[in-house]
Image (cartoon, rainbow, N blue to C red):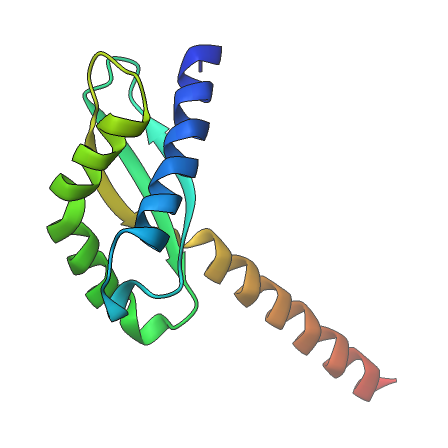
Length: 117
């Protein structure tokens, strides 16, 4: 990946996070964290990965972000100087859940090993 795209991804993640926290007044989007942005080199599309602590609200949050993506894109265009603002595609970031699951499995194995000795 090019340095330019890396800089765009970093700035977009920062600005989208600010927009979600400060500009969207929806209780469903309360504690959302934008974890990563992955922009295509042609700036046609940017995958925006998000996570939320309350796993029961993940579907509702994705629906809300999808509905608000036009609004987010307009605000993003005001904050970032790019010839073209990419289409935003919101996706749930499963890596945090995966990490927690792995940690829990390791702890379970440690507990079982301790009981066996």
